[in-house]
Image (cartoon, rainbow, N blue to C red; front, top):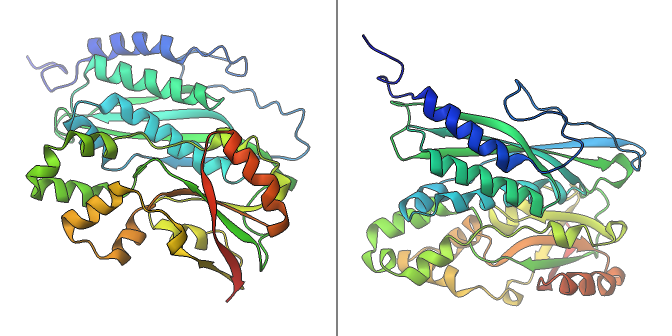
Length: 325
């Protein structure tokens, strides 16, 4: 006799885990109309203060950083990377985050790890004013090795159609404000893992490991306190660096002029470059290099934006301007 458990899937463990994580996602948000366990999550779409509501949707995953997090016994912390990256991607369009659904795929469901992941994702969502409303946990032995996890999440936000920030208002002469990152965030980890495989000194450097596993910074507390009527465009600097991410929002007839000498490259990036003799072009194309968010505004409005940035505890400087192609 062969049971489902014999094949590697333990439904009893899965059910016990679901009961435990149910408590983690009870946020008290009255817009969430049902509990974990239903076939789908119900979220009341009631936006009395928004004249023309537009939903803003995004799916994200934390990349191969999750492999390093598992290797150094910090996998549950990757929940903050996943949620913060996801929230950044929707709020740079002017949206307010509402709800998040997560996906956890694993070769062997480990109750404590899955429970801690969901708990941390829920906390990360609450920190940004939204709710983790449900998701999917899938145990797939033979597809994914035991001890490995693949995570992703999807978010929905809302913005008034007249207040969407998509770069269409950017003009020649606008200034580019670079808001500092707190490290690698969630990009470039395939390169970092290769360097770790080849360099025993890096593998044994706890300071370096702590730095590369620092959770992705979220910028929502900054953005929601800005007067967004003063903002012509925003870019979350992820894979592709400043170049690729700025090009995602610039009108066709405009380009950017960055003064790279104004960007203080953190020591962490210099360590990576030196360890792998990585060409500087690859560094700028792979990593954020110390700039995690870009805000584009008119020169006259910059004096109104900088105090808000500093008041929220972020650091930033003008790093360039918008020019014609």
